[in-house]
Length: 248
Ligand SMILES: [Zn+2]
Image (cartoon, rainbow, N blue to C red; front, side):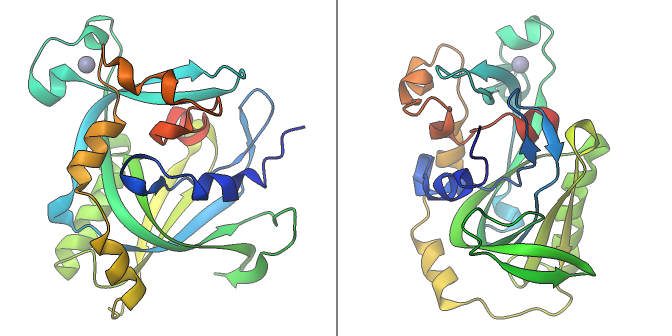
């Protein structure tokens, strides 16, 4: 039986390109990798990269099978929509999708279910009960732009209203499963000073563009393929599981 719960901590501690992990709000999945119940719902966080640092790339997201038989997805750079060059995946009628990349500092993540060790404390959040997983790490937030750009619009809207994304705390929330998954971004109405720990964390970050550029596999770029897949889950490139990238 998959120990789905204890895998979170390992995931968080695993660093991918640029020394940061990828923020994922994972549902509970069955042995076939299908999402069956909600779990991680809300990341309470702060932006480390501002909207002027927003990176977006067109990618082809493809399902992969690890050596251990676990399904995950991997993003491949679309030469056509990023650079106007010939792209084999586009020619094969695979429709590319645009994704956004932000550096964030995640304070904690609210889960529907408690961890196996029962160390996560219960908390009430807008009338619902959750368990708090402490994180306190810089991470990469990666998201599709949403249907009709509705997810991207949330980032743009708050940035326009406040003049920056970096001056307050945000909740990044996942809701629903599979094709019904959507994400919401909610700011605190009051701006607040950044903790010293967060200012320090920002100083250690590599340029976002470099990190994302290395993370997305380019066609014929053998060095980014399964040779990095040391634990058979494809996590080294930051795409460790099937859930939100494939269905979200
Ligand atoms: Zn393409």
